[in-house]
Image (tube, rainbow, N blue to C red; front, top):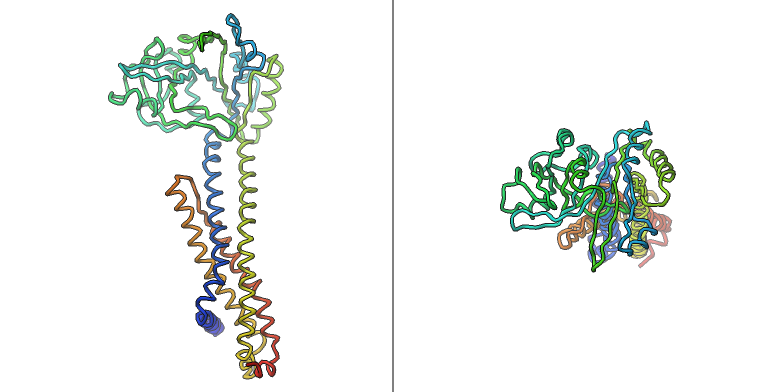
Length: 422
């Protein structure tokens, strides 16, 4: 019985709103724009942070990335033709990191050399990465064809390489992929596999791979290319000695990552006289990015919430005008036995219906906007369930909050005075 009565009151509220279609529509616009802007802005914010967070996660929440950098002292002395810069991580650093910490699961060394690669008439400058098979465990990449590096490749000093998909397409566009021999520098390597790659930066951390990488066993990189690299630019020739360009350390537990990073930093400070390394912790960056994302969403939500507030004020204003227009109707209903709470319910239902319908239309607009942004610009947007439900609930709450005063004002109207109203 109560359910039937409630449904009847809702239909009655809708009929009253339909008596003034244009006014009802204009009143709803504030809620439509408010909810639409909340949904759209949250979707854009979610999408903007999704890619960055995903890239950081791909670096590994248990990984610590240490990179060699040229110190300011080495930079200033690099202009001397006969000078050789010696800096960066060493094989001894790798050994100490492998043996000294119980919280370390595994350590992966990385040596990077820029070399021209050739296959017939095709040429491409590759970033040759000397490393171990464990690299592919710490930096997970999809295998497109063939296989990745194996332990026996290291043991046998096998001249094999795993190319990235981009590099393979450039060099092997018209050739059978696996089994081809590619000349890197002055040496030939057999292509045994192709993997997908990432490129760019995740926050302040450089992604460990690039689109033009060629992965070779560390033992082969040491044997063929050594530790001293020459570079000729603008008539000057510089030499650098770098044993390892990067070391990736994997902690055994997420809880141990930051403590292990601090311990490694103390160790490096002890054995390095100059600051020729940087330590990056993806886990710390991930936490920072997630905190920034939450702040960003709160700011966006607050800005869009102002539109909802304006829409609520518009609803209250129109409902107060409606109470004045319907004073005689209120008096008649009170005279034939309607109670004050029934008058309150009636006007409250009308404002809630107005707000919810506006919220539903606004949700549709809010979902459409990010879809169009993605379609026309390629920018990632993400519509979440919470991003839809929260604005809808807020719009319903606005209908109750801003409709309560007009409803109570209507219920307080004196029936005798109301009946005299023209």
